[in-house]
Image (tube, rainbow, N blue to C red):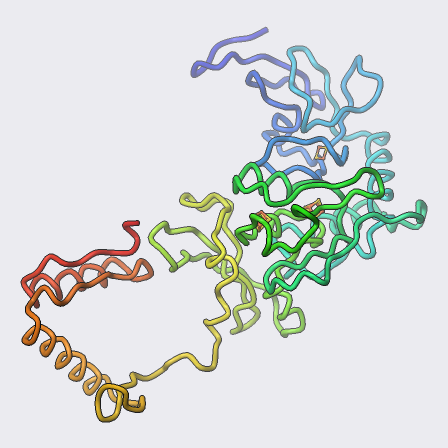
Length: 365
Ligand code: SF4
Ligand code: SF4
Ligand code: FES
């Protein structure tokens, strides 16, 4: 049975006893998600092509002997699907026990990354401590990588490949890949080197999608022992004019991390290296809190001044340049970090103050 709505061919299947419509190409997981079914996942990231690595999202389909991975199985008309049965939950528990058996600890600090709690939450849900299948381990950490932003603790890796896929599919960078197979499987970069010697742009996408904290935010982890509850405040990254949405993570009055907002209209979960990792200056004790002017003019020592003194000195400097070299000797580039009002003031300053159009904004690039 089918009908046509909004240009889509809609067909019917049965999900947990309920007859549902689906669009051509939809997976069973996507159909289940629309009905808020509680189907666990580990290798799934809605931004990425489904991969079918962890098998946690298994569902039962009438006529198919074994459970199928719902994230990679396309919905078909007439299917009869079950998302939660005793047998499925047992199957998922066994899978979790296998995964956890070679992970040093499922419960890790949430500051490691946005998705870092996924494994721990599922391990707890299924009571999987890994003791049943203890034995060989995969993944060797790279504590020798000197980069100060991304920790590479591959002994926590479960080979879900979310990092590899997000780097390729979202960042278009292909900086990381997989070497070897089975227990020898390892996430790595070309020639097995350091991230800074690879094509990595340090966008942090791999860190934020990693469900185990194997790839982790080293700057945020400095605050693992900072007291206070972890809280998120939605904001806009001030670095350029794109307007990426971010969550500023705090513990009491201390900024402890910045995370990309998956629902940010301008970035949809992406950030650049500055937005992701360039936030420690916020709390730098050497930040200027008062204006400084040079004592005795050019080359002199910088000393604290009042705003009136500082503005007066700046005005004198501009006037001197204009009087000596003419009005086109002054050129302004407004910062992309500044709000609209400031950008407007800069062009007004140049146009009205110097009768010139030599003004630009770095966001224009
Ligand atoms: S930080 Fe970005 S570019 Fe670097 S490996 Fe991770 S996803 Fe790829
Ligand atoms: S490092 Fe993290 S995201 Fe990458 S494969 Fe391992 S567990 Fe998955
Ligand atoms: S979420 Fe479907 S196989 Fe991993």
